[in-house]
Length: 117
Image (cartoon, rainbow, N blue to C red; front, side, top):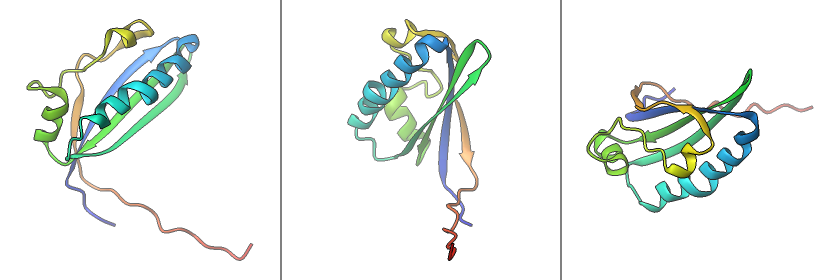
């Protein structure tokens, strides 16, 4: 077990099943690389979650930062404002206008279990 001194930024968006793959490609091929290109020292990890939800596909973006200043370096003075480029708005059904920030209280990577199969 280890304690974590990170802040996790959580943001959600929903799209149609037809637009899910194009949106995922936009995130992983354009938007995430653009965030990485800013070379924010306090940006620790980026994670994308996806699930089918009836007639929608839900995406959750988790960005982990060292501190609030690092988030502001990415997002601007209003750290909770969601940044949704026009190209993304064209394929999304709906999205959160505000990101949420949580103190990451615990993070652990489980030890690899070895077996003699």
